[in-house]
Image (cartoon, rainbow over all chains, first blue to last red; front, side, top):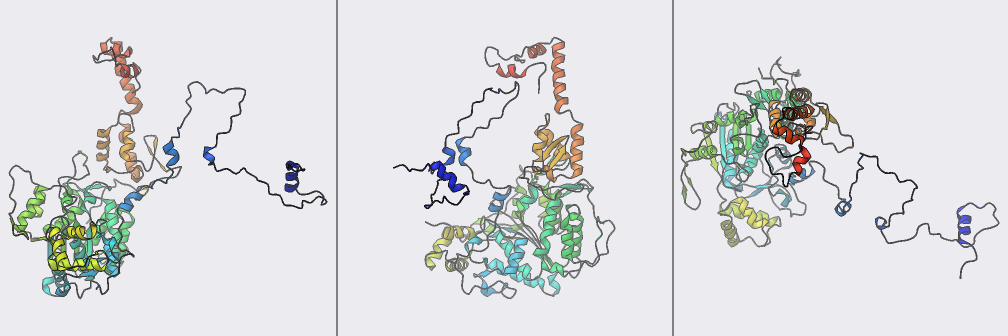
Amino acid sequence: MPSSICWKCLSTTLTQPLRHGSIKPRIPIYLPTLAFSTTPSFQLPLPAKKSSGVKVTPKKGTKSLVIKKGKFQAENRARRPAPGERKALRKRIVLSNVNALEVQGMQNIEVENMSDQRVEGQVLRLPGPIVDQLRAVEAFKPTQSWGLFQSPGTLMRRETVDMGKLIADMSGEEGGSRRTVKMVLVGEKGSGKSMMLLQAMTMAFLKGWTVINLPEAQDITIGHTSYQPLPSSPPSYIQPAYLTNLLRNLPTANPHLESLQFSQPTSSDLPIPIPPNISLARLASLGASDPEIAYPIFNLLITELLSPGRPPVFLGLDGLAHAMQDGTGYTAPNLKPIHPYQLMILEWYFKFLAGRRRLPNGGIVMAATSQSNAPKVPSLDLALSKLEGSVVTRAGQTVPQKERNPFMRYDERVMDTLKPGRGIQVQRLPGLSKEEARGLMEYWAKSGMVRERVSEGLVAEKWAVSGGGVVGELERAVIRMRV
Amino acid sequence: MFHIPPPINGPRRHPYPRFCNSQTPNMVFILGLNFPESRLVKSALSSFYGIGPRHTQRLMSKLYIHDTARVGSLADKQVLDLTAELSNMTIENDLRRKLQDNIRRLRDMGAYRGRRHAMQMPVRGQRTRTQTATAGKLNRVERFG
């Protein structure tokens, strides 16, 4: 039955204030303000256009912009990643995982146990402050599986303990400690070369050494940072942005630079006045503040670090082949590619590796080759083979030393740097022994990454599957591959 | 005592290239044209008529600009040098004028190529029974570019 009162009148009386109080509605009436509909607003038909009398045609010669809105455009409303966001995600380094089980009774790597024969085959935890320092020298790689474990730990293999002994020996007060050890790490893919570099840096940090690391030679030679020439002949080039970054990370990586004082008399040919008696950490930050002064400050800092009474120095470089290849991504004004040896930072490093410059307070110059992302450099292969001699594999096969191919052109600069007689050791990292493999697999099992019981049989099987204990392959076989 | 690099790079605007997402990005002036700071120098240079990959590489090598440099990361000196280099080259309208002059010269001397240009027909002996659309579109005495 229709209401006796007109709806429209009621609505006006309810919404407008009453003029006189005699008429009051007794029943509250709820008025719908909008029609309820399940149709989404964008599917509603467009409102009919009001037809205006005069049709306006566009002026002759003018184009009206028409943007077609396709189906894809309407649906794809997700935010696009900001520039650099995807790369940051790709290069992200996760060092702990709260879901992994905590390994009970795991020891920290310390000065006391780093050269101890008894920790051989055990996985030791990297202490927190050292982790920060290693992060600053970019020792961790995104491809390493730190993110599967509660806290970062590393296997003390035989070579690691030997390295620990060497570093402990060189840190002592004896006369023999002031030598410069030059070393190139070789080995097949996944044999732990970058990890060895990390372990050596860890132990150098523990002993209070100054560590300067060039984490990826590819970043230097690929031609993605700014460069400018130095007035030298043959021309040499500096990379201000790279140097700035290196200087910025130095004080974080080496906290002892805070306590070392800048001792040289201030030279007048420096671009900025340097206050006397500032700490070396402050000096490095000064250089990091402006790419223009990074190079002179870097030189000054190195002179300071090599002056008498300073701690030993560790110089690291990963991805040696990139630093010794034929050319770089940079070009000289004559459009010829610049040779890596013309880049000041690599030239500087190779002077120490070749022994043309010494580390007066002792130290280690260590370069790691890479097998996964390396250009083919025949000169490097030949030079390393000549240094190493013939190799006996674990299976008992003898790989003879390489000979010079008369039809190949070799880079004499590379051959000269790695010439026999310069005292460069080539350290080959073989596969793990079964005991080391067992220790590593037990650590994985304790972290909850292995479901089976770690028995003699399982270790033997996985050791064989991984090509005789190649640690990267072992990891792939045990914790990466789930059947 | 130390080699101080020559002042190729003057004071920088930003130590690192800045990526602008805002509506009004900071612009850099090269040869009277504005480029957003986030644009690659390589791309900015080759956007000029008459400058291709080869000239781009030559200019960038000459001024020590690396391949992935953004316009915003250039020093003021480098921007000025680039502008100076570009203003000495025959590019943009000068190059277009040169092209038109060449065609006009051919037409005025009554050469076959000049006549064919004027007739908007293929110039180099292509068939004309079919497929002359490109010639019809481009070949003319007042050719744009």
